[in-house]
Image (cartoon, rainbow, N blue to C red; front, top):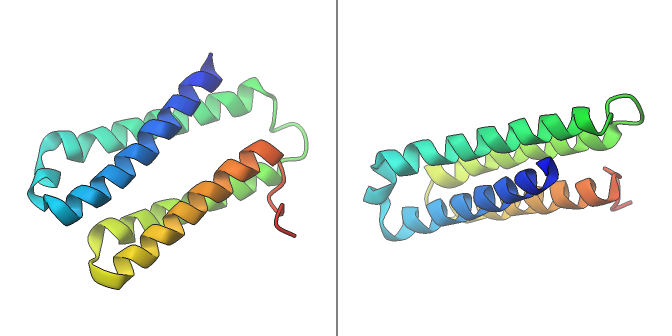
Length: 120
């Protein structure tokens, strides 16, 4: 059940991020409304909480955990590049957006393979 909740929040989070990027280009005034300011933080907090619950539920801290470190580093990259994406304009925005999407894909692949160096 927690895994389904976690996967649901992953989808909500990515749709929220992409949606905010689109809105920042087409209707930036909408992003100033409370719903668009608060909802992403609630979604991402619940996503992180469900991920932490999964880590403890799966006893993943007791064994080899390099993949968890890889996911956390990917998450930090995703957050940083997401902030740049939403706060800049022009080429920098789209480069940061592409980098954030690459981090998202990396996190997903690491979650499935449990191998942070799958690309080697």
